[in-house]
Length: 536
Image (cartoon, rainbow, N blue to C red):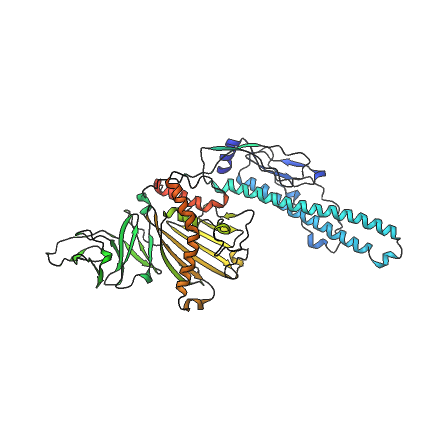
């Protein structure tokens, strides 16, 4: 009951009404406590002819006898959710009764209009019966609309309860006083009284100038390059945490990572070449192995000289490094796409933004219908409510109403699976219901305070022939750059504001959940917490 109590402490009593009765027969029992949920127990179900052929299709047990009773007690989380679940069960039962009423009335209309009835009933009698049935049908249809509104209101209340119970995103000292929103389609004859409540406002402080990276953030395995880009006689220069490094393969073919600075005169080593598994400085020919040891010094006597090297490992088509001072962990996380997917493109880009800002952007999909109007989100509708649904202790979940599963994987990876039917279109359903999928991996390597090395991998579980089409890799890169450019103009603008002191996380809302959790995870790392939030 932690989240509930935290909210209730400042609000005295938090009320989440779910009105479930008809206007003329409203008899609620209010359950008092830290979460108040109105459950209806005493409504007349109405007289319905159960002998009708429609009866068995709608014959659902009346849930009211099983209503939970917690009168006079404070509700813990499980009790509050139990009452809310009963409300939903009641709404289902009530809606079925409403629909059944309409079915039966339609049957009566058919009976009145039966040609046999005209032989022994006058026109006036038939007209009178039809008028009465028309009024009953009108009332029944109104009741169905009320039931729909009840369900919508109940689901909104449940979403709000989940926000309080499961989120606990931030406990900011600042509080805001708001009025209770008017109940949607409330069936109560009593006007709703505005209820004052004090709730902690979820807030993050991510403002500039950009701080130096905390050493604790370095104690993770970071993917820095794709294996296919590191040939036997090539080098890949990178920046990581504002330090220059260079990747190359040793004589045994295994990758190494050394500081991209010659020990002699600080010349960049990537300007040289690789010979027999050794990187040669272009200035005076000094040569270094993958562990940083200088093994050749032309024109002078060889002395014991080393340059800094990092633990380097190759796994599943990626080169990983450990830039921290703590001993590296024994295992590396897997970033392969799910089974059944084939990798179609691997793209590397250098972007002029701080990696946290790019992470924030990638962990947000609600911006797509507004930002990506000329690429993958062209034609997307703008729903009235966008939610990211995730376990209370997790860094992964799925978007509603978009068929997209997404995950933040520490320290800087974003994985997403998009369900598609046709290129560029969404089914509007869960990914499991879609026949074809696009899987994406984004790695945001922190190069410097205002630069990110982005590794992008795209996989499909359909059209494997596309992998063999000439120049297809260039087409995928063009598309990826076009999508990123739509984001970059916004993120660069954010970065400019942040450097001038603006807070780019000033007012988080529910669909920001995953981005907020990333920020909380990162803050916990920098504070040196032993047990990081949202991770096992």
